[in-house]
Length: 617
Image (cartoon, helix red, strand yellow):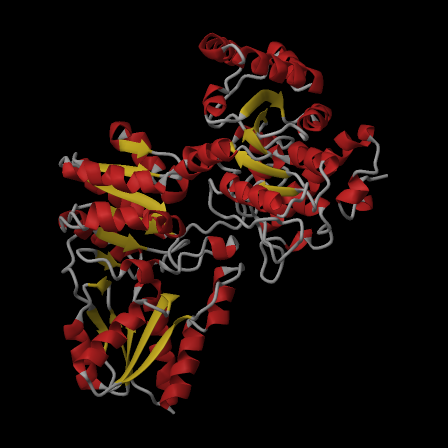
């Protein structure tokens, strides 16, 4: 008989016998694998964290005790154990479960997270709030080793070491970043040092030595340093944490024993846990990078399914960058732990000395690029649009203020689909448009992408190139990238009744909408604006002469976006015009397939047609 169906919440989990827990972990893995094969998702990390999550809910009194996940992509087992088994098949589908912890979804989701390096800060806040309310609950942060490449994690640790409140940080080291050490000696020593007897003895010995002024304090420090020889936690100890580990995070019984010993330890505690990314599913174990975030796949073989052979915007960027870098040896590329996702893996393999992966540290990536540019290098920083939000100050202060020629290639701009509101890149036009000295552009298709990238390098100015996830529009590519005139749009079609001013990947749907409007006796023109900044005001003036009805369309927030730029210009000009702005309203867009989300938001060709028809009629 299966164990998992009998567990509707962690209270049920805590009632089952310990000998059933390994079976439960196997069942959790199978459900996660089967579901991810149909829905896609973050598979490898979730498989590796099964025992950690099961042990946490078994030992701690959740939801009164709080668990905070970093990034949240490792939390699938958490959802299954906290009352969401029946809905789990809907994960990452429209109106279904989120792929990340979400406070509105469950009382067990203590803190939402789609970006990295936030858990220790949030957990510290929860712990201090508990202290101020004079409550006794426990607070645990589960942090992936990659998240420790982000500076925010260290800011939180130094503050936690200063405040000295009770909290536990579990460092889930899946051997992709920190440590491969889980030997018999390490296991035995960790087991010894996590016992309450040994903790008490260590505390008494330290306090005794400190009574003897400078000599005693030096002896205590020496003892601490001697301890660190056997344990790789010196950094954490110096920041004020008591460090334990590493322990085998895929051994459920060992995890429970260690957590039982540590849950009442005072002050900030760091438990170093080593897991296998993709644990229990051979294809994911062998190719952890591929299965970190994956689309639908065949469970038997691990092969991806349903992939289009059409050229993606990411591949168009990657190919164009290689062409340009072959001819210009001053071009360098920077990523923040996303070489495959941004298409920089090909650049890495061909030009390793000009490729830099800075880890999950977008702020550093931007200022590092500024330094490269100041030194005569031509850097391109390839980020997901949603992660560029994290380095706004560096773009403004370190790059644009100094007019340094750094190129930002913002992948996943606009709607990204199943990863949802934490990952939709629908804010970049709004938060970047107000920065002086910055050129802001969006290619209409994969061919324009290569020309715009060359334009960016040749502009010798801060330049942001933003483009969407997924396949392009199947246009024929020109043989070589060419410079485009900066700040100039292009007429695709002129019409006497209205003109659509379109930006980025809404240009081709705008053309389709204009064609559909012919059936309703409406002659509609289309302009590919290409640049949000500088804005082509000349072509807007030309459009006004043809028709007073102007429509802007973008896959960005309406507030402060491309349509706002057009409206500001027309208002300042005191022009005679009628303007319809199509884009995303004042809301966070939920997860779902991109096409469905565009339908819902009224931004596909059919909805554009209906909006314009209703507006003009």
